Image (cartoon, rainbow, N blue to C red):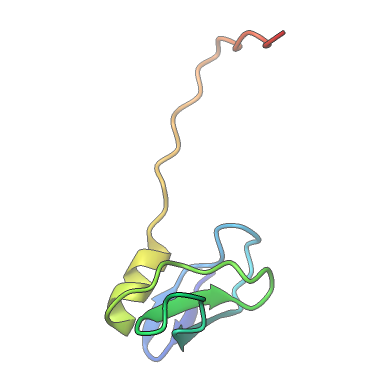
Length: 77
């Protein structure tokens, strides 16, 4: 489920799954001039970007997870 933030959809937090995200300007230390999307539940934050639209687009990106094979991995000793 996504939430609308000023007509732009934000994906749930990739860490906790919360839909309670917000947009802020420069609330992350050393990132005073950029737009940032952050999670109000776990405080995760996306990278600062020059514009609100870029910050939301970056927040919405998800890593492609590798496919799992049926072969178990060896356990490290």
